[in-house]
Length: 180
Image 1 (cartoon, rainbow, N blue to C red):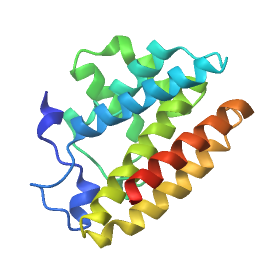
Image 2: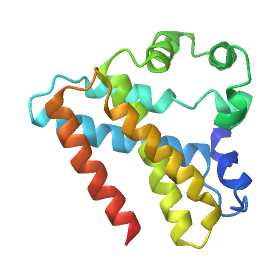
Image 3: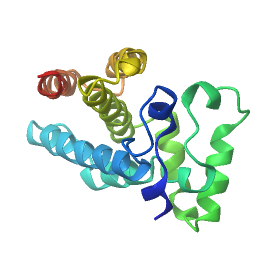
């Protein structure tokens, strides 16, 4: 439950006050919801995807932050073995049984993990657009870098061509809806 009170630091660094900043739990929820909807949509067109696994991956993707806090990407890059830090946090939370899923997500070795990575970035992109539209213009660098990262993930060999088409379509509709 600690993630309900942890504001995402990337937004605050860019001038979004804590009172208006997205929390880690609201981010996790948005990622899980988007992941579920997209996985269901992909199953609907015949792509083999385990929706239950997608939801589990999405729910645990940032849960370690309840122990280690929300460390911005630029800082995390300088932490040797930040993944080990996250695994230690999962153990501290009594979530050892999810370590394999956590590793799978970190490595992006399945379509399910790639869907969650896409939705993690998509949720950040959408939140950035919401903030930008509220007047927090300094978030534009994060919006742009997240869009680039999202485009790169979509090129993953783990994403079948028919899934890539649907993902690009869904993402475009969501981004357009946030821009209006």
